[in-house]
Length: 351
Image (cartoon, rainbow, N blue to C red; front, side):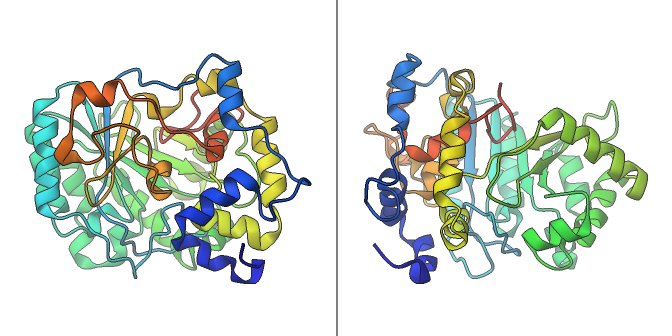
């Protein structure tokens, strides 16, 4: 195992990440976690099985205009992984042939940086699917060619889900970079101006909160009230819902935990907060996660650990509704993050 001084290399080494999750940092007896599988067995949830195929989540590329400290994708301006139009067409063919997928969830990186992003959105809408775009907000102001994104989103009735670490400049900029809060506020105002986030509006605007450190998110309901009150009072901003999402111990956040000496304590918090009710409602039971290169995963987090689905349909070129509906979902110690407290998913708390 590498020394902590060299742990920044872990971000590109998925095997080492899994090794740390399973055995700890030093492979000694001083740190022992109950295997996640044991918890699921006790709850009668192992093997974990799909409840249906409803959400088709697609990572269209890891390129991003930001470098956030908590990012589990390790996204940034230097990432070159990008989904091609050919792979997008394969996704479209699957969506056309499988009406059970009602929702298409587009992620990145910043998904808008894919050169075929708008073409892809238009083709998905032709299939009458509900589209979610995970927009980091600052992309709207990053370049003039993105300034019309609010109008584009409105034109196609896209649900916008945007990360805003906090309703204050200091906490947001510390987590996401200098100037991010100011640009995020401007982008939210631009979205409001075209009708997003308004009470009764069909144009859904939801925000995402991730903790800035090695702790679990507070009550989603209470936090949503605080965000709504403060953003309205200080900036006249409206939005629909706030999603409080637990940071999973992988990629850039795992690196932070190791560098700060918080890894073991954080994992112990997750295990202590395990909730079998949340475990029964994890997002991997009704979602498929598609990588930028077309490989299939049970969830976005498994994708970042390169833990492909445990069945013969590893790639969209091998897609089989029957095979994927009857697979066993791949789990590991990082899954404690989705089952702690009220649970965590791409749509926030689940229990």
